[in-house]
Amino acid sequence: MDAELALQKAVRDRLVTTEDVVSNVPAGHILDRNERPAPDPSIIIGTGQTVDDGNSIARDRHHIYMDLHIWKKEPSLTGVRAIAGALRSALHSSKLVLGSGYHCVDCRVASMRFLRDPDGETSHAVVSVEAIVVEVSQ
Image (cartoon, rainbow, N blue to C red; front, side, top):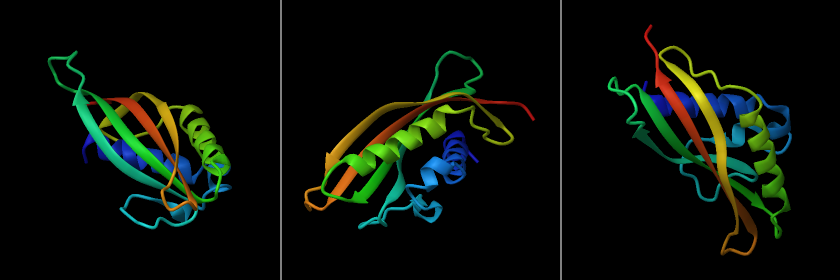
């Protein structure tokens, strides 16, 4: 497993086990797949990128960027803002455990954008997560 996949699994595990998140979005609606229309409401694990930190000759430190998309049928942005806030709190509450081979040094919500879908019925939020992950010896 690579560092980005380890982080993705840890983020999803955190979200589906955080009461404030699943009270807004059922655990079964927190998905890693391209689905349109997305279940209502939902958190879809979106695109990601891994960049070598460049600070180590061992090349064992990575900056990982991940977008989480929140979808909700509503005319306002109130619901997606509430879900984004719960998501942010869940990821900031404590260190993520990535399993063997990786250590999450830091994880934070770097930005949140709130959008109205062109269909006029759906609200959308994009929550960008940044993490620093280090490979560790077994």
